[in-house]
Image (tube, rainbow, N blue to C red; front, top):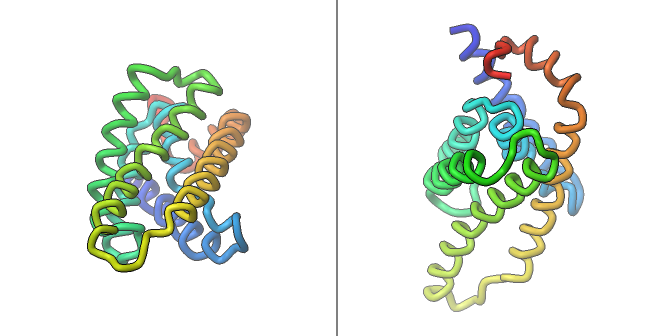
Length: 174
């Protein structure tokens, strides 16, 4: 029970850091996908299903507070989490620097394809054209920062293991 509370508390801390602090930064730093990148790192590099649950939890959090890009973020993130499991187990190595980064980038692209599909469908009902250029710039910056965060987590993996042990994540999960 204590372990679950520690996971939940750490999840809430990084979600709050992303939604409160990071989104207050100037352009382009406000596009840092901190929770997404940490979740993918936890799943892909450490092999912990906690990362998949955090992806799902992020979608749920965005839906509860109505701060996501589209309604139904839980569905988008759940589908992305399922596809991350599939591509992480079948195509990309969890020990390869390039494999982890490509998995993170591909997962982000998959998520934004779901968003883009929603925007495409709703653009027919609007008299104002959808700003596709801004959407693709947003995807570019999120992809760049996602790769940067996952790379930093990969290179500091040894030091991070100590932090995760302090957060009661056992060696079996690392």
